[in-house]
Amino acid sequence: FAVSATGDIFKYTGNLIDGSEISVEPWGSSSGQPMGLAIDPQGAAFVCDAAHQCLFRIRKADSGDGAPRQEIQPYVKEYEGRSLVGPNSVAISPQAGTVFFTDSGPMGETSLSTPTGSLYAVNPGTQLLLPLLQGVLAHP
Image (cartoon, rainbow, N blue to C red; front, side, top):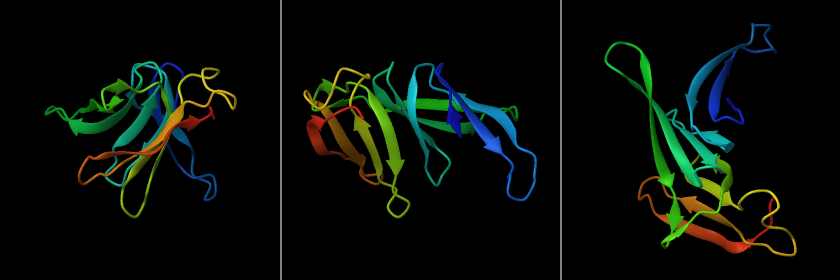
């Protein structure tokens, strides 16, 4: 998978190792400025979007006419009533499915001299958002 600066998400198929042809197909869109992308074991995409200042969950669903449609929803937009500053990296634990993401804002707004970024984890079973590091990270 790959993201574009316009929010489009593309899926790559094929394998260079076995010689199969590589193809690219549109998969979805955050309609914003995606910075990071991770796919969970169920095939949902988690997208850090700086323009929307949130972590999106995007799933493919059947529209009833056989054509797939996109289901997009903000997964995390705030912590304790404060908006995120701009999520930019995301990873998913293969064992527990925990979603980890950084929230350090746009490039230049946080640095080594003014670290304000945070690291969060979301438990997939409880949907509980946990701050692991808060207001102490520089971008990136």
